[in-house]
Image (cartoon, rainbow, N blue to C red; front, side, top):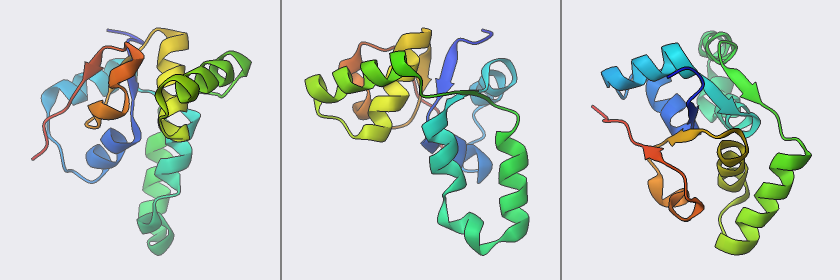
Length: 127
């Protein structure tokens, strides 16, 4: 399972807030805590972190455990292709492109965002 998954922002937020206790997510995070740089940006921009300094500190510590995949030229080119072909939002196009370029399966609860990209998608049960 090592480095098999790329975790979408919604899953990070659900996990961090205790909205999911899906055992499969725990296994994924232990073995393959990979995210796109856009997920880091979206997660750390979450409004609740601005309002709560302790929560902000915990969020930064939590996300520091992830392997973060940067937006390089190859991912950027795939992002452009994703947007042109499928008209998806830029953050989702970047996350999808990161998964395509690096051969990851997406872990998300917004499967519709990635359905046209030909990616394998894993969804997580919510409480």
